[in-house]
Image (cartoon, rainbow, N blue to C red; front, side):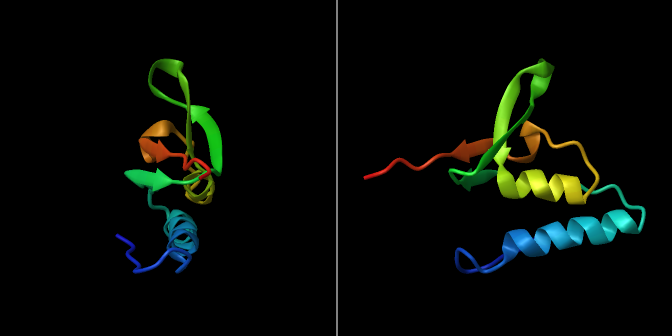
Length: 83
């Protein structure tokens, strides 16, 4: 588990590096972020072949882990609206 006290602290970057580090050592790893608020998203496969979206950070973490990005890695993606 990677924790930080502020937005922009580097949690996503560190998680991406850890995914690649452990993948390089032969471990099967995958990122998971239960809830994310971001306008930056990628379209990926979901259950039963239905397409969905995950945050871009989780998408790149999955690639770093050599895992197929999928909706279950970021099941709740919130997109903020402008004021």
